[in-house]
Image (tube, rainbow, N blue to C red; front, top):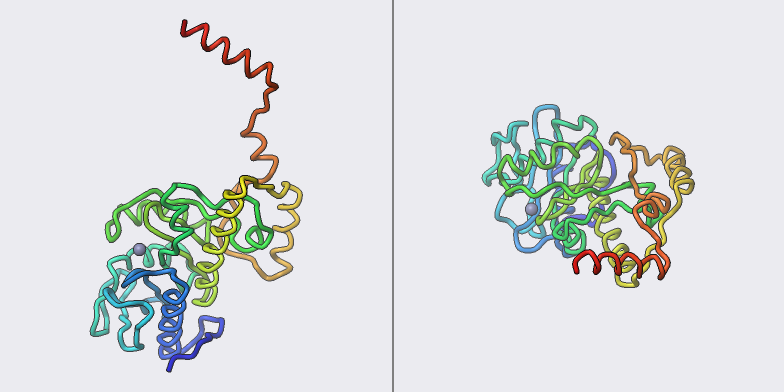
Length: 264
Ligand SMILES: [Zn+2]
């Protein structure tokens, strides 16, 4: 029987990492973040080896000996099964982010809906998200399992800890597997909250000053990340207002009248 909790930290034995990956796989499946055999999980065992979930197995039904060990180029070192065709995405993240020891990829339905709509989750809507993930951008579409996909993710890996992958899903990563999993959970939760504000037809964004205070609090709460800060992330009330123009009824009518006249 697998435990229903995992401890933080990346300094564990290989057996502990195997158990953790199976537990996280079950959590992804239970929460509906993956369907059928979707998704993949990996952990950096040491500077040369990656432990990863196998292809064509439900992430909710993995056993410790289903997992595969590869090198940093994705060549299998041991395991009776084969690694996922999406392993290259994990390897790219390990290469570009030495601070990262675990990667989780899934297709949680609401965040994946934003990815399929080409909409980033980048607004300062919820204080906890500003503290934890900041923004979740959308990487352009690339065919899964091909270099197109890794090329699309590459420019974003340094600056964010969670990425929406257009028309595909979500990838999150962190210093240990629990953090990477929590980031997946946070991304989906934020997508749900964003969707509710869209349904309500109203979004009140935090001001630049509020966002500054939250970013300053990050260090106090121990929520620092190695991701590089990006100007304009998240989008504040002032930035959003800058994109909007306000017209009086008269001004609008004059504009329409002019346009109609020009066509006539
Ligand atoms: Zn996928």
